Image (cartoon, rainbow, N blue to C red; front, side, top):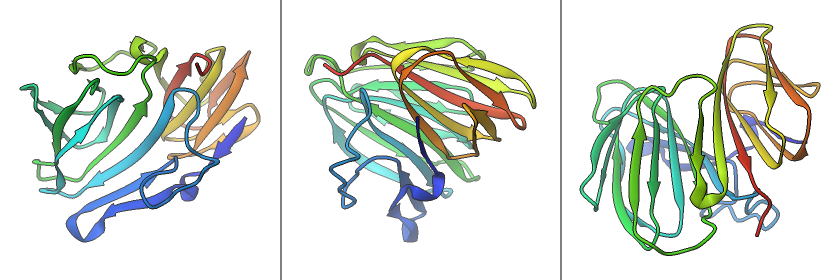
Length: 219
């Protein structure tokens, strides 16, 4: 198990424009050849947008993009005609496939924080697609078969336990609160990368919210 603390993330964004980013993997000018990916995961970014701030239209291709809003509301528009608002508890997935353009903005009057994960597809190309699941229930898995991945959302009370899925690659991100994972205490923004996970358990040190990515072996 490899624990990465929130303070170790690479800083990015444009703070003067109301955009603050924290990258868990090698990203943009922060090139680290030893931190390019974990399983199918190639990025896990924490984004903070001030009211009125956002990312203007930009392209993506050959990437599965999954977004989880921590607080606030995200406005999404893309070149396939989708325009949605994403709030806490919603799972949004944009399959960029052979190519798509999108806009992400904070059009609300309150700060926005979201976690965005990028996954490499098993097969590149194809047609882009979009999906949003509003108010996903606790312990309900969300499958991203294009990347051989499964997202498990868990909300724990203090002292409550949950099993971490067994698998070749497990990525556990603490959204809020604190948990104890295999003897290590993790707080908000911390993450653990676990290879060949088996019989691992997470315990809430306080009320907590976890995103647990279960991924197949690299092809």
